[in-house]
Image (cartoon, rainbow, N blue to C red; front, side):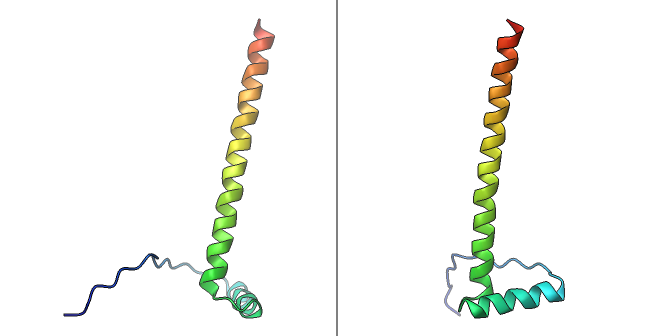
Length: 73
């Protein structure tokens, strides 16, 4: 029986147009990184930016609600 190997990653498969896939491989090679490393960083940066946008949107809504409440008085 083969030993069980624990991984701390999960494989995700998706498709890209060939020119974009080729450019991704080129950039990874230029930066001496793997495509996986490059994609992980891109996704992490996207998620951080998304979180910032959501927080900003919530703060704007809160300020608008406070302004509307003040006007109603």
